[in-house]
Length: 366
Length: 87
Image 1 (tube, rainbow over the protein chains, first blue to last red):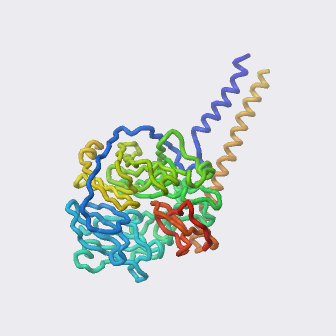
Image 2: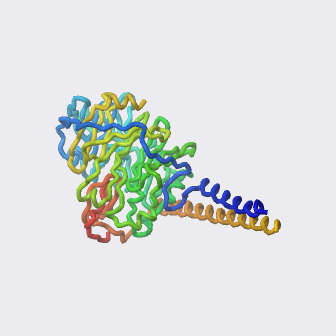
Image 3: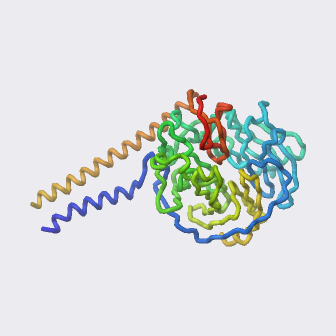
């Protein structure tokens, strides 16, 4: 008789548990994929020393990126927004791109590391650059422009929307775009493929995340990059404790949460703005791994005087944690010269650029 | 007694199934809202009367509507003491 009484109760509990497991937290409060992996510890931790300040004669660095043995440094110098430096000898190779309203000029400084695709075409270093205010993409032949001292640039398209919150140039006709919704409560991802817009299922799922009307939409802001070898996209939010790694065709998708519990977007909005956490800054991708700068500091402290030293978190392309690099300086971005085994870090607040020899660490990641 | 218990079990299963149908239909609605928004923007619909901020500071991957230019600025956020305006 007792068994008969407990049978429906056990059945009911089992059904509820199975349901909770299948669709854990899919709603507007979580910008997540079906599979969530929690990272509580990194298999390797390295404490970096003081590093050294490389002698790069460029003032007003805003951003930098490394491709092969060239460092591209973006600055506010209106007559040369991008400067090119050879590594590891730091020879200034020249400066390109100007500020202005001309046909190949920029109103705002184009990011060297975000919204730009660097690649070699016919052994020439090329950059596909977003003009985000005018909705254009340029193709710049860097090698030829530096050699001839004349800008070798052309328009790839002038029909992408302006003011995109994220752009990933997949190739010359296909683009990943993210823009603010018209009520400013969502950030909407879609693909432009030969001028036609589609929203793959994986993007529809992430697009569901929303904030209340009038709230800070940057809770949903992410940096987005693509690995062109395996076609995986990684998104790093700036105010949530998890990252999303996925393929556009839906064959792979994983949310990687650093901690025990996923940040709830609704609960974040209940906090005062100054008490909200600035989680990650700066996403960089490499052939065998990717990494983010972990800030993990409340916005009030971050704006008035940072206290927590950041670290760089590295993951493989399956989303597994590889290593944590602990720093002795405040930084906001980083990149790695894989050819010479050097890590470079930059802090946008102090303008300090540091270099660390991490050849041994890179060998241990393999 | 056995019949009562079986009935309870059936009601429980039905309740969970009904919850699920409701849950998934909400999801589909949200996906449709997302698509509608993208299509609206694609048609060139502009947004007016947006709140902007007077004082900004650097914050990578953050965006802000800056009152000084009435344009979105990349890698910037409002300072905690910033005043508001409308563009």
